[in-house]
Length: 165
Image (cartoon, rainbow, N blue to C red; front, side, top):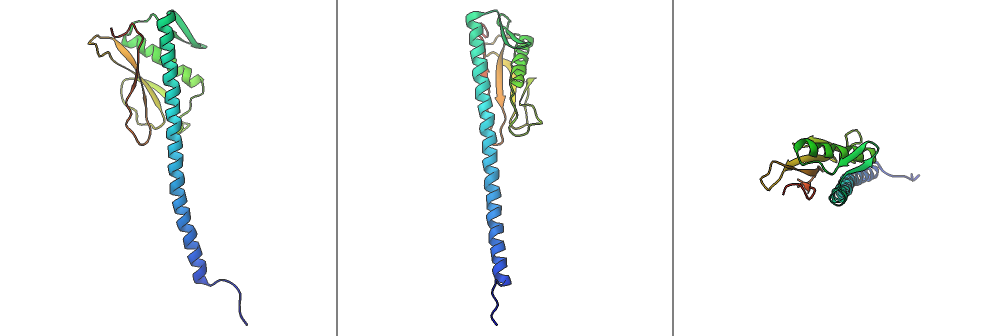
């Protein structure tokens, strides 16, 4: 009598092939996930950069106080001292948080912070800082950094036309 079915060796070969394919798939899937998180962080950076740049251009044109949302406003007549630039950075940070910015790498980490100066080791986070004017004055400019898993970024620098002259 002839039995129908697979031998133990055939079953082991199939299980080994499935295991290899699954291992390759997991590695490729993790790469896709990391790249998607990086792209989402860079999209947050672009959105924040355009908003900051547009708002500071409005300051140059209109002056006065620009209301971002709720309690968040920018005093366009503020000098570019450390405290004023940090206050402007805080207003932008609070605006982005209230607008729903999320950290793509980890929802428990904030999407944006303001440190005043210094590094950041959390992937997916934007960081607002102040930096020195290159003109040798004691004034400050606003910088926006981002952190992703596979690159060392350079800051985006923003200033009103009356700053750093």
